Length: 67
Image (cartoon, rainbow, N blue to C red; front, side, top):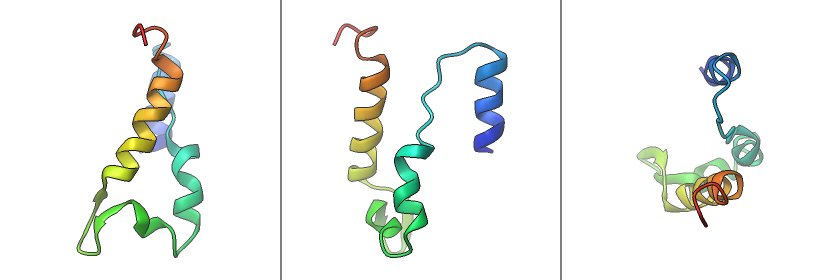
């Protein structure tokens, strides 16, 4: 899914932020990836994961957004 989304971004010449490199260190470490979960019963991204993603989006698009 990730590769297909990035392919569409390239094909359509859209400015997409690839967050996979940001999260890969967590995903590769079996002890670290749960640090990004809401809790052990809910593997949705938690507040920390959202902070990391928001910081990366602002790093890429912040100037264009006037920040």
